[in-house]
Length: 102
Image (cartoon, rainbow, N blue to C red; front, side):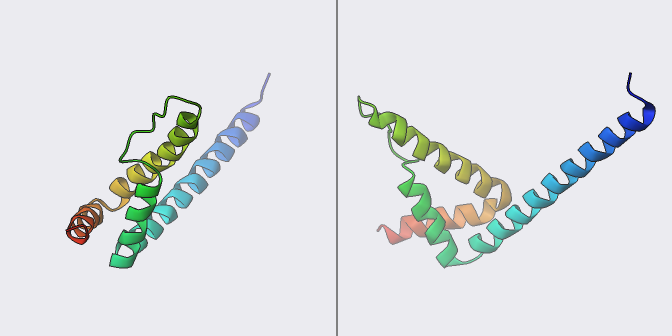
């Protein structure tokens, strides 16, 4: 049977781990906001999203589909992070990409 001290230590350890994860996530969000704060950064992120195949079908009819889906999954995760951390800059990035394609 676990003692109250063991349970308290486990809770404290879990809390510290959660705090470390939250700090790391906050730093990643801040880093992403910094990148997205410049036109160069937004252009780079837009290129990564495009290179991931996010905006195109990944189906090929053969096993290449699996590879494409992996790339697309990375793009989807990146997009979610950008929208969560820098929604206004995401809209700026879309507008800039649209204007550049004209």
